[in-house]
Length: 347
Ligand code: ADP
Ligand code: MG
Image 1 (cartoon, rainbow, N blue to C red):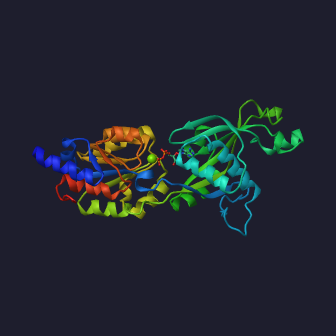
Image 2: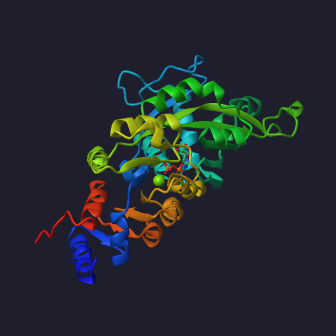
Image 3: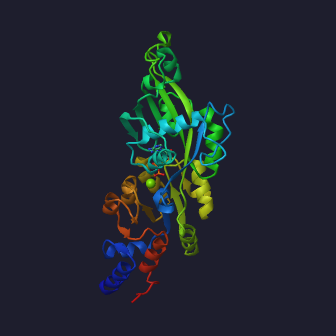
């Protein structure tokens, strides 16, 4: 394109909140044949809310769900306790999944115990030492109620997190799968307690791991996300989705949006998102990666074109070639149309 045409394109873009980092980028976007979306915060609103709390010992069959909002059903003590512990462990995390758990506990009027030694395991979950979280056995041996219970390590996260801590996640599998097939993000809650603190001298020195239950958050897809996917398909552009979320949740969301299940890569660790983009590009494809988060910056840099969307973090915007000012997935189509010269000046 001539420098004048390029200037017109970038200025039309600016009027639509589509910022191209230079004229060469505008030309590159024309050759995009594949769009790779990050899921959370890009195709979905990224506004999670707590939907389910399933305590394993309250449901020995690993199945029955309770609605914590149901008026005719007082949440059972074990569920209240499970939510208190999960919220305690998550209180120092900025992750949207964590914020939703803490908000859910607060809305239910729960008093969230203090936590120390908070550790974040990116792409997996969190762990923290929670006051009063030791198992009830310690309460009996000390004899004076929950207040005297010792601390324990509480973990909240995915199967990988619990596995790595030596806690078998399989007893919660039925509950996990049911929630995930509804498109929710289900998280396991586990506890590691020091056997010495529980007064059990024969238990050895290793911490005892225990699976307590499952909590789930749900996100909603952005209103026009399906429309964006359909418009890209209409232009002959392939649409992929990558996410750190689990396979079943990812597929439920992809199916809502009309994304081919074969184009979904789930359980991608943050550091592996760039590799995922590269492998999509392996067959000679020119991919535009669209993402919003800190985690997405390397993937944006690896893509033929990196696009930061909406309330995107500074890190994502920095790494991006294109910035979409509005939090609107159909603006991806707009960027492509502007570069192809099929979108004309609005005023
Ligand atoms: P996404 O790509 O969807 O933004 P992340 O890479 O941040 O997801 O996280 C991947 C998975 O790791 C989540 O789906 C969840 O199972 C787990 N996880 C991450 N952070 C947390 C947290 N603070 N609490 C519980 N689970 C978490
Ligand atoms: Mg994300």
